[in-house]
Amino acid sequence: MWSPPTVEPIDDPAGAALTQPTLHSPRLLLRPFAMGDAPRVHALAGTVQVADTTLTIPHPYPDGAAEEWIALHAESYARGIGAHFAIVEKGGDGQPAGAVGLVVSREHRRAELGYWVGVPFWGRGWCTEAAREVVRFAFGRMELARVVACHFARNPASGVVMRKIGMRHEGTFRSHVRKWGRLEDVEYYGILCGELTESEPPPERPAG
Ligand SMILES: CC(C)(COP(=O)(O)OP(=O)(O)OC[C@H]1O[C@@H](n2cnc3c(N)ncnc32)[C@H](O)[C@@H]1OP(=O)(O)O)[C@@H](O)C(=O)NCCC(=O)NCCS
Image (cartoon, rainbow, N blue to C red; front, side, top):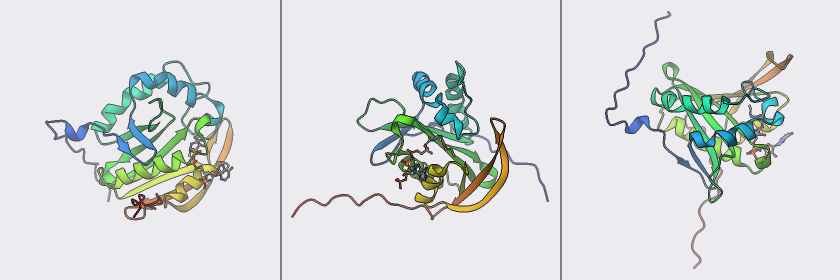
């Protein structure tokens, strides 16, 4: 039987749990976006190659859209309904190479994972590394039970990322969405807490 969704009050006077942390993976920092990242987001997300296989990134990318998107992040994290991370190379120039995030349904302890990586950084395994860390965060700090993700059938690289972190293919939705006037088949994936694939090599042991 349907009952109205409960809206949990934010009870965190010190604000510690409401501030989005920076996550670490072997090669990457996953940090909250700052307003200064907007020009970089505009440049990378503004390419047709990135927009083509995402549902929500507009093309051409409008002026001010990156600023508007970044401005939503802090409140959505504080309310427990989203977590958006800039993918940044450790030891690099500190600028985002892409984005990875969760849109959370607290009622169902579930999130939808999404990501994009700027074209110059494709094929380095960064998306896989970032997605794994964010799903670990979803099951850990966010205490979620399930993460889902989906990709256009014509975007197999995204399916590789999902399978490499342990997500299972749960179905194909035929002609499910319309992108730039064309109906697209969409592949749906899911993962439950405990199913994450840990494929980082173990730390090197000191010689001797
Ligand atoms: C999909 C995307 C995020 C992948 O980012 P990435 O950092 O290059 O991903 P990774 O390097 O971690 O992994 C990609 C994998 O796909 C594989 N791959 C790439 N192109 C492929 C293709 N055409 N067919 C099959 N596999 C492919 C790569 O070989 C790699 O696998 P490997 O590590 O086993 O070699 C990136 O291409 C992107 O941002 N695309 C545009 C936006 C988008 O599609 N976002 C996802 C929406 S669901």
